[in-house]
Image: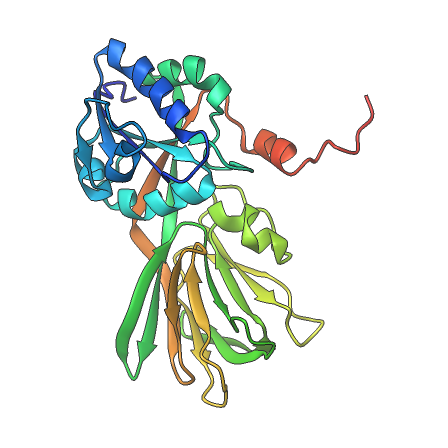
Length: 294
């Protein structure tokens, strides 16, 4: 197990409240251990007098031994889509709300970070999705997602009509507000709100969750993670449905377009402190124990 985390990149969203204090605590912890710290450019603005080099996210992913993402799950999602291509291990410090991916709290930094640097961690490999908008046989938009790809009707109150194919096999024609295509990582996010199942992160599977379908028999479907999923947006639609990746990257499809989703070859390497449990995270974040009386 790798313990030689010498060069460590710090990334996150600079607008988050209290982020500067967490960054200062991290660098004060890392520097005495002889670690080389690199700050993402936008974080350098929070501690302008810090004598640490600044770099882009791509440069940090390419050159670092470990990347610590400070923020919520959204911060980690944004960074993960870039860092996955470099296979750089990622560790999350939570400054957001739920924190399914960023599971170290600021209160635990002083104990958890040194333990991880000493090799006391578990490693997970999470796959991402590649989404393409295809028009007349030509790819006109492309993005990737760690959580989910969502094809929806946008702000319109109208439904969209599409046909769903898995590995070129026709599944159904659907009228709905849209479809959520989620990885196991994203199964505790938007997919869960739409009635999808919670999937363990180690599963090699994708769940397809209809959004307010115009039929009572439409239910989420779990398919093999290596499947090619295709949505054909029928020509009769009058709206141009947005295609959103992780709620952050947007493309627009037109009537007659296809949206094709496959697994990316790049995977995110996510580190957790020793003792981390997905089920414990669910109990905590989803308040599964809230109804119990001590």
